[in-house]
Image 1 (cartoon, one colour):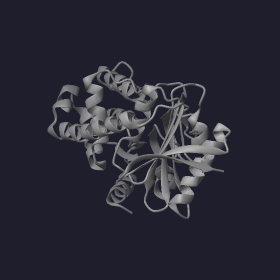
Image 2: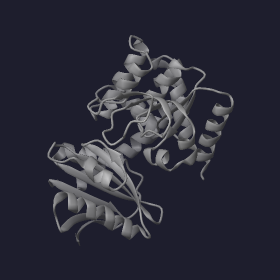
Image 3: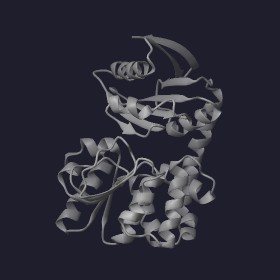
Image 4: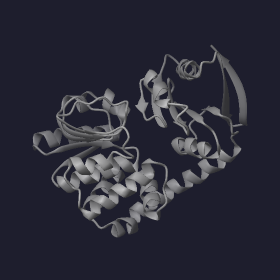
Amino acid sequence: MNLDSIYRAASVILAVLRKRPLGLCDASDLDGIVCAALFKMRYPRGVVVLASPAEVSKSLLIRSVTWTYVADLPCPGRAYMRADHHATNPPCAVHEFYDPHAPAAATLAIKALGLEGDSRAEKLVELAVEADTASIRSKEALTLSDAVKGSSYRGKLRLVELLAFRQLEDVLSDEEVRRSAERYSEVRAETEELAKKLPVEDELVVFFEKDRGLSYRYLCILMERRGVKLTAMLVPRGLRHVRAYLGSSTPEYDVSIIARRLGGGGHAYAAGALVGGATRRRALRRVLREIASYLGRDALKVYVVDDEGLRAVYWRF
């Protein structure tokens, strides 16, 4: 158990003991952070817990308590209200605000929390939509999205508090927020450089021999903008796991189907899964086999990124 997990567990236990409202939101992107900020606007004494979908499914503590509010995540088991737009997440809350066609979970969260008409809340939702639909056009959305990606767990919680209780201009000028955004902007630049070196094909599968610290979801988006129809970025996690980032730029492909088969989830156009095996190679083979099966292939071209550069290999099944 790492320090973030310990801090999260302590937050849950203290909130239960003190009978505070408990909110569970996605830790990975601006949509989840905005959903958390909306919760704090509605419940100032509430306690926010941030997690990934994989952590929700694996954490006994998260699944053992009753949540006041869950947003942009699979249902942990017991919840009073939940706002979500992922087709792969089944309902379980007493009050479900669910629409798989919604551009962002925040558009549903603002309704669930009764904050429609609040100008600050509505502005945050607008920014969440920009970020979650990969159509960032404002400096505010870019800065906040980068700040989320560049923050630690506690940094994200601090950002939630700032967005909930401070004016947006003050949040954007906050020194720590700016540092976090600048930290991620370097990652974004490195990701853009790699995207220029990858080939443009209808279906692009890339395996990284080691985690290069890039934004792999952003890499999918960049390649789709260049003309790739289906993207799969496969990244090692520890000795026995592979993280699959999946994307599509056309209704011709629904990557959520692949993600569900691998135990993950997401949308038709953006999904993912963390896949384990006895060895990393076995985990990788399972991911590649599911991609090949979805495409109706018995062989798959995979581009491997390693210290020597880029090379193509073929896996047969």
